Length: 204
Length: 204
DNA sequence: AATGTCAATTGACAGTGTCAAGTATAGTAC
DNA sequence: GTACTATACTTGACACTGTCAATTGACATT
Image (cartoon, rainbow over all chains, first blue to last red):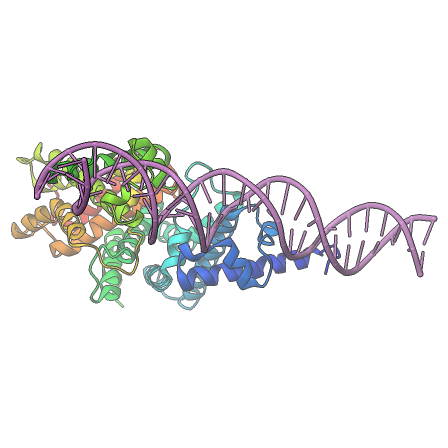
């Protein structure tokens, strides 16, 4: 098994390692994600991951991007189902997807939104993933703005909207706000922010 | 130097270790906080921290509480200076204190709001620190509610207010929202949330 | 002077990330 | 077919981590 690898083989093995790493993360948390365990679980030798990732930080970066793209994917899929409804409803669906994803995959969510390297700027690939992710909501904010539905500029509302969701998910996942009917509560908090941002709320 | 320690000596040495640990955290980040380095920096031997903290997690827990209390302290001090002004202004000051603290002490802020042990519930001491911290804003929300100033129940507005601030600070610190005049921007985002929550906004 | 107590230190170990050297196999040249 | 080389992969080794266990050493009591 030592002939030169084709490009496809490389991306496939890399993807396999990535999947394994994500599985470990979801199963046992970030502190359980060790290079040795990853190697073992993937059925390769200790040092093999270094053939596909420069170091552990690079692996984690890749995981971050993968998780982010996953979130983007489910958000897009969810909103595709309500494309014909009004914009505020679409945004509500996007927000709900975020919340659901964040609460159901706390480890992945946390990883995605907490880069470890505070100094270095995000890679271009990471930046692109972030943009794509943001765009799901931002594009609809812009549309709403163009139609004169917003009480404040779309990027501002997007900021507040996103931050409120992110804050609720984070605080919830860290156990800092009590649970109870957390899902309905967050949904209505979200509705509240949206309702404030939209000039007038359509009744359904 | 081996006679039984008095209670005061214990808390003093413990506090000294805590201070050292906080200093390391602020200076070089959480990944630089190592028990050996802490011991060295504190001028004690490798194992000494174990006399005052069960293990590293216990040390970090103590740091979390210390950081939280520090934030509570500055918030209380800040709001004490505007106690005679109207409630919305007081809340604005509280929020601003949070934002300033979060942006100026990113490592401490992150530590405070991201418990490491996902399973175990917060200790009573931690819980008390959280409550005291929340109460700075929550008490004023309640007052505003009693005076009929709020458009929604105080705990709900508090949730959204807090979450929005926390989200903005976090996303900003993780480099996920662009900077620029971040400070003014967050302030006005905060104003926006408050303005939505208050039935009518007082002009100054 | 002997003993016991207890703060504090040092020794040791398993586990981590990672560099460097080694191994083995597939392809190529003759 | 044999020798060579490139390359996928493995193993050895090291510094560093958290932590348990045994040891040391100074004081108080007898």
